[in-house]
Image (tube, rainbow over the protein chains, first blue to last red):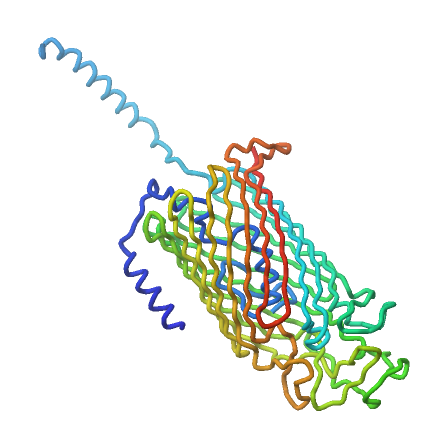
Length: 70
Length: 434
């Protein structure tokens, strides 16, 4: 699985290495719903998930520590 | 005709030349630099969470998991100058928990029973968390350095943390790389189940079963828990309408990773029962180290002016034998200029920890054991609906702050192969300073 993800990553980077969208072309990319981070309210869901689920991390948020959760 | 206009052109040329000289004489014009954050922003957030289930870890994997929690939060982002931003986040989480109340099931008026909440003092608690983050952006906005400190406290758990990150943007800000590290130094104030505490005498109760009851229990010597995390992320704009981010987090933990108030019951030891409550044979014992690795991807597609598709996938593995996959889809639908409705769906699956055993199935000869069903094999579905209102003109005001957006969400979470479900409703108000 990790190998597959690595391959996809490398291929994606290779395919896009020449892409350079200009600032004035980023109207769609700059839409608030296009943000690559979590929404503000997602912190509540991430918190209960970090208590109720074994997995954490790789979501731009908390990775463990700071609570009596996993 | 041309000859007649020569003096006119000469005058124009002379004036333009003068203006050029005049510009050269002055200092270089200052390049416009946009502030990282124009004005102070305040986020007021709150959530109400409820859950119920039948596999409470406090009572060894069999018992009520009923819990409710309300968590107001305030987040303030303050621009200190053009380049620096200080943000402070404070959250209070007040909860009541039926399973926590059964740390001592004998201190209320009710019959002691793992499916009945005790009315004693351990049924509720308040968690408080405070995080401060300082970030500095370079002149060209291609480098961001940040540092953070955090503190959290509840009755039996205290945490101090700090960390930092470095972000570099390349390729006309089409590519972004971030490395971050965080350290948490936490301390348990263990609240052991009542039958393991000094002063508990079986003969004070009317009981059935094993008259020679004695827990396998011994106190934890090390009550600290340290977490060290390292995270990497790489984001890339793929086209005018698609962008993606790859994320990887590695976490190493050591210290007391067991939860001291979670009981286990052994299959090879006869039960001792008071009223409807079986006394624990021990508390959970888990290794004192754990290494976790998570890799994820989020890719967002701007389909058209009405629809956006947000996708997320994560693979997780750790050295306790747990492997997990998480998929999430979100479809924001624009309704006019100011409203967005976003249905979402999340699927989660995990395999169980090597040390997990169901209620009364573990053996006293094992080195490590837990009946915490959060570490069992299960699949879960989560369905949600969110609504966001944007007011670009900030017409509604409170003092010097204008309302920028309101966000409301509801999510329902359900495990497929366990009788567990949860509801979470959250709301957020985003204000910006004048």
